[in-house]
Image (tube, rainbow, N blue to C red):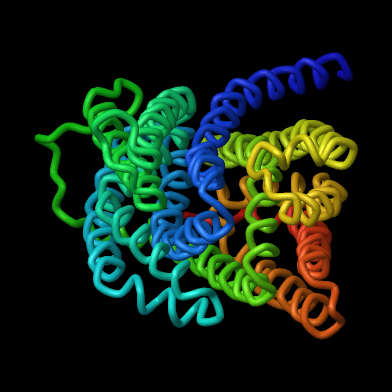
Length: 451
């Protein structure tokens, strides 16, 4: 009996790693797009670095909607694939594209028209020159928003079907294009103009557009979940309702995170350009650990969804627990590296002594929360695969909006702890969320959710 259980656990580990390692690499490469922008623009000074950071905060608001649709698509595709219902999985993929085309086009138009106004409202204490460059960054990146949506949602559909390698390969190409175009337009290599911050935006937009076109081509030729141009793309209210029933709570969750991040960023940006630049550097450094958590979270989403679709709720829970353990091992190891060797890591992103000094403190603080972050990211992935997005939304509302923002405001501004106080608030939030998600997963009510 024990040997049989051990064999089953080995099967789970093998499947988890098969799904997780391409997702980890994909997420690492995806994050590298932002890291490359930060590292290359960082050579232009703290002002340029702050402009890219503020611009990305606004762009992330639009991506919140895409992430919501992607969550619904992944969960439903995984359920249908697990149940052997390929035609229904394809219908979900088609309706995700139809719904998202309208949404992404709307978001693009809003950002093109109102980028400067949005930035001015959100970051009114930021320097005028920084806001002007950030607005230009937002407008340029927005031009590729529709194709970026295709990139995000098609990759989500493929992951739900159990294919994590193809999204990894597409993202690798996006990263290469971003680096090349960045170099050409940020610094003005050869005949190309030196555009600085705008050049970083051009690199991101061109890379995302190419990635979206490639993702469409892959979906049309994919054998695992083939979608054809001759298929019906007429809106199907029932399928759209099912996508949004999962996606809307996920969107509210992501929206709260984005708005919360904006408020959090407003608190930090009010401390000055150097603390904000240090914040950006520390975030980019920490993302090196964040990406393994996201990768294992993808594995949990796929395996939980597919096992529930196949009528195996016990295996779904077991997959979630084993994935959590593996992810905690990896992220705790990264946390140890962050704590022991923060200075060499943050030097990748900036050479400003004042920025580096503050970033080192932040990286050491968040190193302590890496096990908690792993628990949150991976078990939240499992609950998303089950369609239990409302519970995740409520946890974010309590922990992020209450604990992180409350402590950040009091510690950094009222008690004068500055950037360190804001990051203490972040660590406290991660500890609480890990406790809440563990409790929810252990109770098992998510196994009974119908999607």
